[in-house]
Image 1 (cartoon, rainbow, N blue to C red):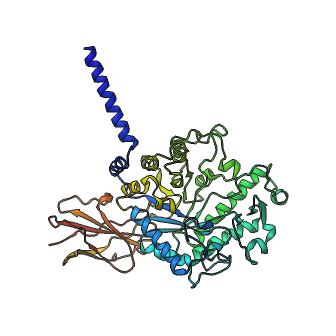
Image 2 (cartoon, rainbow, N blue to C red):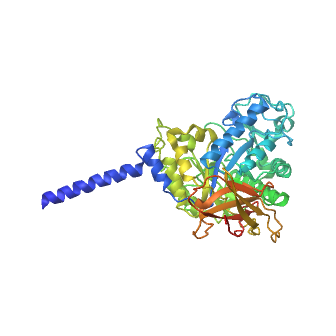
Image 3 (cartoon, one colour):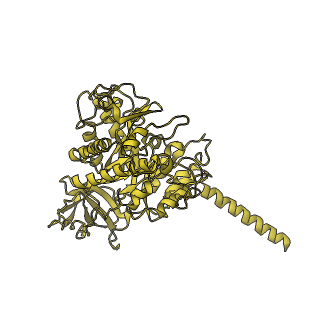
Length: 524
């Protein structure tokens, strides 16, 4: 009897070892099999940051011709679209400069190698990028840096640059020139930059990164005491005054967006830790290090509480295994502090490496596990990856895992506080065969506009098997999401000739509210 029990225990131990090997993703094949079984949500923000500062992602280097720049951007979009990405956040203002023509600030030196020098042959990069992004049915969020006047890697500063025309607006610190956010004219200037962009460009969102007051550098002091003396009445200390300065600009930009173009989304990607619980009971179960509240003077939790922004994308560039700031602890904290706004998690894709010495980042399952955990939390609405080149590099095959997670198309999460009125359904859906190509699905625009008068922004084509229940909540039945560019038809080429299908079409508005399905259409 004792021997039999020992054998049983030994057998169970081997079973547990095999289960552990499976769950740990000991091979790429195991990871892909595991992730392919994950049920995908119908709505999910799947984005990537495209950094232009110092040519991190785009363009690949300074001085390229316009044709090469444009082709590089198309290649970036095509790669990410194949992975399943549905939005890009492109850095169009890296250091008080511009990747767009309609700007009071000079052309970025990371375009042509010299600040103020236009692309050659001339074109408007942001207008081009928006058009190419929208053609692929992806959202374009204009990513702006708030605090940099000049970057320490800058090689050229034009005579008419803001640091030369308004030198009293800036504080020199650690090789940079930073805006003094305590000056009201500075806050207005940055707000006006945003308004100018949404006025002249069809951006889907305005996005700011984690730079407000600069990250502290040992042995240096940010010298804004004189500004505090001038504008700090009513504040007991300079720290609270700085936080209020950032609060003011965050709120002012949000109000300006709502006034100029209320359907434009407004989001921020702060440093992940607001405050630690050992400093503030309202903080996260994390330890030590810098925090956005105490070191960057950015009260990021407050912005969500007050509804000043539409989404927050905390940079949780930490692994599950990191003892001081575990991924799960910080993600859980943001879930509790979402206040019914969107939370998109910023993932440190750049940290994935086979030779990484950081805990967890040499594990091919790290990012897949993070996404899986996100999907287990209703309040987490998606992911953003830093940065584009890290996904393209595909270290440890993690982009291959993303293809499995993002196997089915996803609609954007809705923002009911901005718009909750869906379009009316498309009309007169029909299907007809096309020799050697498949079938063509056609439809007409809704017969009447919705209550708010919004135009149809896109269409979703669903395909079901003949006797299947029509369930448009199933993303596996989406065969195409296409922008409304006047072509009210779709050719379905991926068909099983031995099956019969039924199609329905829905309409989306700019903020992705979805109509009821059209009439069902099938081959007679």
